[in-house]
Amino acid sequence: MLDKILIISILLVLPIVAQTQEVAERQLDNNSISIYDNDLLSADFHSGRREELRKRMKSNSVAIFLAAPVRNRSNDVNFEYHQNPNFYYFTGLNEPHAMIMIFKEPTEVNGRFIKDVVFMQEKDPETEIWDGKRYGTSGATMILGLDMALENKVFHEMELDLDQFDEIYVQNIHDDIRDVPFKNGDLFDLKAKLDVKLNKVKSKQKNGQLSLWCAELREIKTDEELNLLKKAITITCEAQREIMRALNPSMTEYQAEAVVEYIFKANGAEYPGFPSILGSGENSCILHYTASRRPMNKNDLLVCDIGAEYHGYTADVTRTLPANGKYSYEQETIYKVVLEAQQAGIDVCKEGKNFWDPNIAATTVLSQRMKELGIIKNSSELRRYFMHGTSHYLGLDVHDVGRYGKLEPGQVITVEPGIYIPQGSPCDQKWWNIGVRIEDDILITNGKPVNLSGCVPREVEDIETLMLEKSRFND
Ligand code: GLY
Ligand code: MN
Image (cartoon, rainbow, N blue to C red; front, side, top):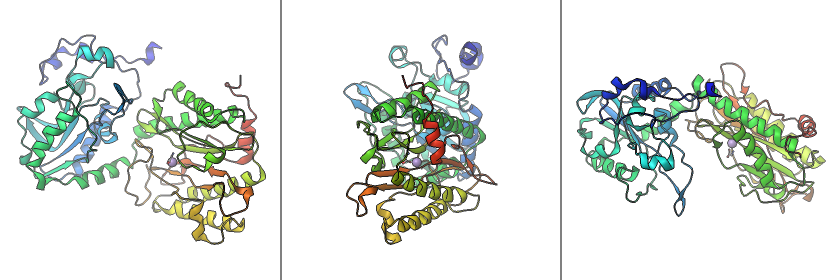
């Protein structure tokens, strides 16, 4: 166990370096943060991403990102914190109340020429007793490899005039940043002070370019990112296989969700990357059903659309299962139509194709087959039963950022056609309450598409066979 635990005690062994930091150092001792994972993105990754961003920035410019706000759940309980993916991508810092400035050229800050500066929460032993250890400014420079880290409270008095830059890029900031009472130097204060500085240089702001550059960078995964994404996908496939084994019609949707999320946590995923979708019977036709309250029945289909998040990277894999282990004739018929459409979509996931080509390929199959089954009369009616696109990028966000242009090696996209026929639809009643979605995570290469979630069965016979296996949850 111990060999898996990487205790970061650099702060203890590098006292001389620590003394060179800008902020008056505390006695650095066992108050320093412990990091238990040894496969996080490296400091080199984050500094490499900052360098890539700099290449795109105009000369004499600065890019600014804020950390995600802490979101209140109710009264004095907050939602579990989740970092702004862009901020995480460029820093590796998972703490709230922080901001990074990335300079195109080394820029003088507090008497030093630096390429980036992070403003962040100071270490605070009393709060850390409740919320856990913080990096502190020394941790940020030494562990995360940031050029300079300063405490938030010094931001308003620092000698950095934004007017010295020709262009300023600020990531669009959501407006739900709330003031934390009795707390100086929170994100609210940081943004208020930033706004004062920005208001003086409004004409220099070119914010739209920044989101384009983030999309351009984030849509192509580096090897380090791919390793984490593959891990998230592998965990998710394991959860899909386990729910196939465990599922039976006496379960509720929340019990199916419990099986899935147990596997996520047991394999080290921090959380689901999005609320798990376990929709049975009529709920199989609700695209983003998350309530999970329904008891299942023996003739139900269960749409299981799930994704573990591992060190920031989110999988997204969907299978549609018969609650009793055997698809009915009608269920199997629709299932095979969706599967054929999905395969047509996957087949065109090739370098140089357009982002929307898998959608076109899958939709063509769905349209044709739905007409043959007499469920629709013409292609324009397909939208009633297939009302979403087949693909999105996958990465730090489940619906990751990207430019929706050509497919390129290093991109990972989903291919997820579906057919949803709710009760009351204008077709034979035998099709009602059949909702089917099949989703896999496809890596674009300079050769064939690679199905990263191919380790979980998709074919009817393979799913029914796996469903016969015993689950560790059966008892
Ligand atoms: N996994 C849900 C979605 O892609 O919308
Ligand atoms: Mn998806």
